Image 1 (cartoon, rainbow, N blue to C red):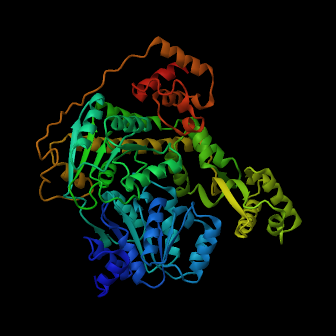
Image 2 (cartoon, helix red, strand yellow):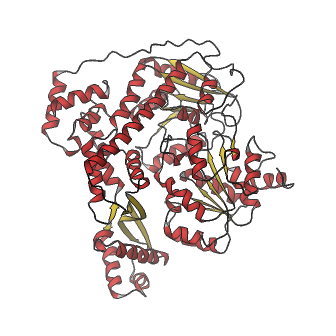
Image 3 (cartoon, rainbow, N blue to C red):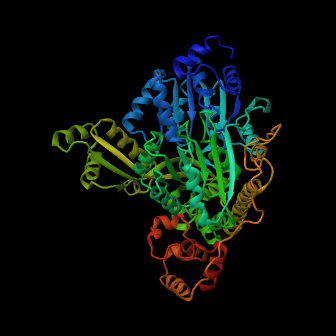
Length: 639
């Protein structure tokens, strides 16, 4: 570090006496005004790479992150340490947001955390362009890659927006970037290859293990691992929500204090479980991969993959949540032949058919020169996962078919904080009579109202209405609850043949499916190879270890069979076939195609299953013991 006051600043604001490997190289580049890519593995200290420069540099540092929990925690810590930090994301109410914008204008904030969606709002960009921006840091930068393991379409617009702010430097950060993904990040943010700082993915304190065991043996193996001294706190990752809940119940029955965590739980319940685990109120959290992003818990002693990870990126990132304090920690993957069939089946199951893709395209291009898209409706009504819908919309945008032009909300609920007449009069004061009548109607209804209907389906009027409602909320007498987000697009060109475009999009999805299956193949090859597991994992990211780790399953000579055990599967009975025929006869819209019915019978959560709560149906998952392909063959013969 070139700054002589480094140690004093580190100690005062961040509680550190020194920097970790890679941090000094990144910080020096940022302070020199150099665009930089920092590839620092989980636990490598990425946040300090922008927090320290933010304190040193004049002007504002903007941190773009999709992780609301991380933003909340980092802002709280920074404020306690005397750093003027704030965040604006979907969880911040309007009054707080307006106050923060005022503080920004007077230069009272040094670090501003923004979600990608907030950065892309035109009003926010107009405000930021008036400020002196010293640094923009983009966390989870791998999300810009359509071929990465967690693509987010909002990231596609970030490079252009960030460059328009004219910061002294841009810092892209990620914990998991393959050489292909890193190249894409550098190109997007104009970063030279020499300015990519990458520390080793290898962490000597992580001991990798692989156990091949049948489904019946997995629970007992998990219990054995967690019962050993020094193996908790622990995270156990499972693929399906039902497995998470069942495993947590099993562990509790056998004396291990465990809780379940998955995306199907209410937000407050998830927050309670997460906070309880971090506070060490219980020993084990059984979770889907919905848990862990942005959670800073240094003393996790074990990470067990009850089902194998879907990719090498997931394996190294999720395992990397263990041992962030540098002490020895255990990382184990349990697998069998059924797991591979399930993972590959889930990829095939989420692939949309041509009717679904055509229906989405029809919705986009039938609205005239402007299209207003409800991602929720398009996803659930056509049973297409949000991540695939996002890829489709991103491809349409990058190929020049459509251009995003802002966002809005479908529903609004105006909640008065006081009901007395004097408060009502103060609330309405200064607004024209027509607006007063409209606001009164919204207050009297005591329920959500369609912004579309109130504005006569006119986007300009709707945006004006939202502005008035925001103004009303700023008075402090009401709270505004907006729901069901909408995205606005300008149609740049019309397709001559919708079927051809649908076929083109289907080919895109098939390419992604092949890419996902190749990742699964890489996981199983590494897990079953006699080669050092650490060498294989870091090799996937282009890194070479000079010697084997010496303490993984391969280095310790643990044998794993090349042929994985498969469970014996009970044949489909006549009673089950009759149930399938009755389901078809009911003609339910969410079960109207062979694919949708197969998802239902296999118990695979999908947008339509969630919207119509079909997971509560008596026959949900009735054929989960069979592969998706086999079940779809049956449903095709029936429908």
